[in-house]
Amino acid sequence: MNGRFAAQLRQHLLDTADERPAHDQLATVRDRVFVTPQRRPFAARLTSNPGRFGPFSSAAARYALIALALTGALAVALLIGAGAGPTPLPPPSPAPTTTPAPEPTASTGPAEPTLGPSAGLASCMQFDHEATYAANIGGLPVSITVPATASSSWAGLPDEFELRNAPCGDRGSLWINAVLVAHVYADSCHWKSSSVEAPIAADVVSRLQAQKGHDTSAATDTNVGYFRATRLDLSVPPDFDPTACDDGVLGLWKTPARIRTIDPGTTIQVYVTDVDGVTLVVTAGYHPEDATPDVLAEIDAMLGSLRVDM
Amino acid sequence: VHELVVRARAGDRDAFSELAARSIGRLTAVARMILRDEYAAQDAVQETFIEAWRSLPGLREPDRFEAWLRRLLVRSCFKGVRRLKRIESVEIRLTPADEPAFAGLERDLDVHDQLERGLARLPVDQRTVVVLVYYLDLPLADAAQAMGVPLGTTKSRLNRATQALRAVIDADSREPSRVGKGIER
Image (tube, rainbow over all chains, first blue to last red):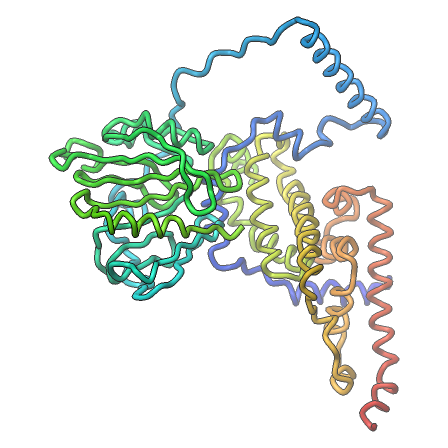
């Protein structure tokens, strides 16, 4: 190729390159990274840097090494099958590890730990008739259908998955929220120093069951939309005084932007499910005195309509 | 970058976010050029960063981070192409190169348009090497590493790609007389 053509080609690529990331693309990456655990170094090398076990003098040497490893594995399997018996597993670690990451505080913008209306609610979407509400959760497009029989208007935030049974700007008495969760607090009252990692859905369930500071129902298997989920109901008595707790609130788990809290006198249905390797937590919250059979049926219908467009 | 990679490798998500912020624009541009599909490009970039974060503890040489990231991106793009092909099997996707051309307008195509059409027609492995060498300005050896193929294969792909691009331009330069007749009819 002559130099003129190469220069034309190079210039064309530079002229037409679009280096502007898509809207929210970086935020989506951050959200997904926040809830994604890293592989241990050995496993990471196996999957992404296979060449680092080399360099091998030839492909034959590499295949010979693989064959040797397979032979060894087969020999071990035969030994076990012949009666050597399984090796006892090490005991499980006695307690979850505490992550050193700094805690968001109640006074810093989007990390504000609140169940109340978000700052962006003024720009929310209002549904007065049957409609589908959709929002992106860390790269997962999640939707819920507001039924035609809804008891009131519902309003949804555009940038995070949160629905409330109230016109835009009002707090409402019911709310449905969905987030990706990978960090749960061990102690909901003293949450600032008790964040623990929960890499998979089962960890989120067990950490919530062990979480101090609220009443927790037994776990039950159920469905949320098309997904198998584990349900827990969390509640705090109305006479509980949280003023001695960190920032005066009870923290359940944290996401990159928000700390999910629970107010005294409220109940939260928590549905924990695994979606493509990340833990999606869907919550429906209300005050027990508002939980008429019709309200609970409305929540069930909406949760049953949850979809994730994979 | 070295310091950020070391911190991210140790599990510092903020450091990784900083690395992502620095490179997301360039990676997105590369993915768009290779895949020529906006949504597929966004998916490939996102998949690249998630895989990079998960596998980062296995990166022994922090200074190789950018090359390693490029390789992950190319791999994600190739996966994206396979997904696009599955979609195309049920939906006939019209790319600019496939769209019926208006004879009168085609005569006015400049070199940019010709190159754009030529790039759209290239097989993805050839388009990838063109992007790596002429947009990212990588030496052939680095491009070969990014694609995970031998140097000789990379050279032959680049050679075939540039021949095909030149052929498009040469063909267009011979078009006007025939196209002119078409206009007259």
